[in-house]
Amino acid sequence: MAVVHQSCAGYAAEPFASLVAAYPGDDVYPSADFRTEWGPIFHRGRLDGSARLLVLGQDPATHEAISRRILVGEAGQRVQGLLAKVGVDTAYVMVNVYLYSVFGQSAGNRHVKDDAIAAYRNRWLDALLVGTGVTAVLTLGDLAATAYGLWVRTLPAGAPSPHLVAVRHPTYPEGSARATGKPLSETTAALLADWNEHLPDLAAHVAPEGPTDLTPYAATWGPTDLAPIPEGDLPAGAPAWWRGVDAWAVRDGADAQTKRATIDVVVPEGARTWPAL
Amino acid sequence: MAVVHQSCAGYAAEPFASLVAAYPGDDVYPSADFRTEWGPIFHRGRLDGSARLLVLGQDPATHEAISRRILVGEAGQRVQGLLAKVGVDTAYVMVNVYLYSVFGQSAGNRHVKDDAIAAYRNRWLDALLVGTGVTAVLTLGDLAATAYGLWVRTLPAGAPSPHLVAVRHPTYPEGSARATGKPLSETTAALLADWNEHLPDLAAHVAPEGPTDLTPYAATWGPTDLAPIPEGDLPAGAPAWWRGVDAWAVRDGADAQTKRATIDVVVPEGARTWPAL
Picture 1 (cartoon, each protein chain N blue to C red):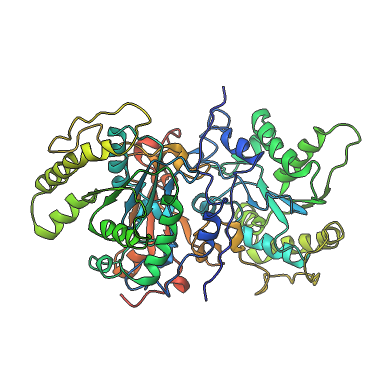
Picture 2: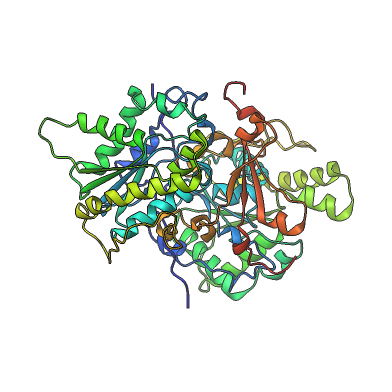
């Protein structure tokens, strides 16, 4: 019996066709601060009006540069697990603060309010939030919360906006441990405590599609806390391991120049289904 | 002034939505002979009925596994240059004999007539050739010519079919030099002589969109013989260097197992536009 595959149909319909035709380049995103050379990566999820929840992330990384959809790597799978808890399996859409990957730790902070960057981002938020069925916006990290606030300010006085749930970014544990020297176990516990705190508010503002499970996270990631990316979120023909929890894309290079230029794409061992070589 | 970008809208419209939902997997394409782990890669070019010429290639390679469109690497750019000679700049569509990259030199020859492989390929050829504006089919190499012949046999007696122009595969020079030990200069000259021989026939069976230049190829590749892939052929947001003539995707690995699992994606030096690191 033939398998029926699902895939993301992309940007053929308006207003998305016009949006992807007019993305800002390195005149707006300086290439000292953004990896513009990998091209813009626009979204993940539903563009057909069926989204009930919008996730606002920060910027794409290696897995996203190859799969051409955002929040596909480990950060995305942590978020996918959070959405599963509130019963949202497919009725979401995700966009980022930035179209391009941030280069350097502080670069991300400098540009969130840049006029041209915000203007283009706000066109996407208008398309996804004004007059749609989205009832809540989940922002990941401080930059995303700031960006959402900038969009809300563009609304006419008294206009309704979706309920905001602002949580820490899914890679806060790694970033914070690196920056402060705290143990990863401690920063992971802090993230999960933050997510637990916001779980009831998120659940209260999104109608679930399926069963919910509001059991709080433990102090560490549990075996079912990460969820794979649904097949229908990636373009047609994308390999299944592009959606899996095993990492498959990594920057590589002996010096900074080569490392910025290189992403190695490696089939994870569990997906090497070919006969022995 | 904002740049307006073109992109391939993909497979949202029928019959292509159904075709990409029902592609054959490794039950049909044995993973000993095909790199099924990289997923199927379906096409490049126009799916909107504007194609006048169908190009039938063989199988995707590294650049195609990442860009998710066929004939994007050097072979594709040689073909793009050939189409430019007959004045076909965008009015084409390309599909391959195989959805997956052939693994091993002889594997490709064994499966061209496999029933399930041919049946799915013929559904694409039906969609692109029956009742459309395609007047000629350009087959690249023997397997493509065989595959086209298999499709023609499925037509009702007396049904018209596009004019066939069967040329050598664009990577014949490299393959033949490797197989026979002949110098690459000699095998390149043989390919270009073959293409020269078929150029008038191709031109006679496709209405040009723009200026033609039927000047024969010299005995070696000239500076304008390769043409970059049009922006509108790749998905939205694809980096410009994915369409350029400098190679950017290579298999890598110290042993056969790792090499099958790995493609390194490297921004070509000419596209490293960021400030010095």
